[in-house]
Picture 1 (cartoon, rainbow, N blue to C red):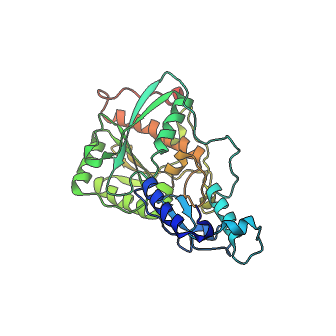
Picture 2 (cartoon, rainbow, N blue to C red):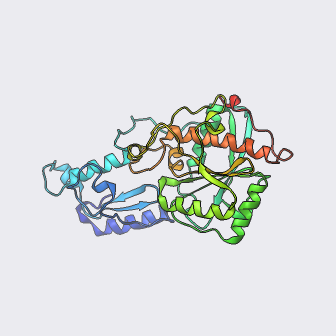
Picture 3 (cartoon, rainbow, N blue to C red):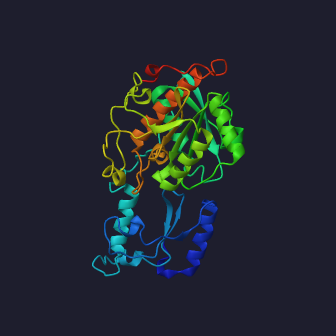
Length: 336
């Protein structure tokens, strides 16, 4: 949005509109080091505001006029408005291209007879626990379309209400630092001892959330061994679902030692990975959109990794003592 002719009334109106659209987030001035100011061109117009969910910008607003310079084709102007427009384009496309008209990254649901139903709980805690509400909805559609597996995802569930018998897998994501209370730590340990498995990722790949995750789950499982999950682990080598290589987003790819190798980590407990952690973004990848600055996997790799982690989690949890309460998970080959 942009205030043509520098209209103050339009700025005020858009603030009200955005407050209704995104009540959890605030329209704020973008920092000078934001990618929209430097992703391609360094000399460009500043002064934009934006709304972020902690992963990406949901809206960009210019309180000052920019459209006149575009209309007048002032590409040589020292105001740098053309450079700014180009930077915004590169930001929202991950330095790629816009989709063709009529093409969507959102899958249409197909009719299928489920070969299996898997239940997943979304973890609610004192933090930005659900920045991308459509991530698991899109993942569920793809699982049904491609593998005839029905994934039932709960409404956000408080840590203390997690029940491994009802939801054997719990998914947790976030963008900021947090701390578990003692009752939450006790509830998480009870969930794990009951055969539950936690899948955790840093939405957008932010470091503050990852640091909190590793610190807080060390409190939950102080005896658990934490480290990189080896390449030959069942998560990557399941029959019919083997992941031979992955791909990362553009902004992260150059800094990864081996850009074909996944970097999942985990806390091992009684012979299984009870907590599986991705420092690199999976959540935004599950939604499927391009965007510059996301430290994580491409949408295709994010789906494949989450699918395999889910298959492993259900089978490993079943082996941990929930045979009488959970239907057997399908063999990975059945999902091929």
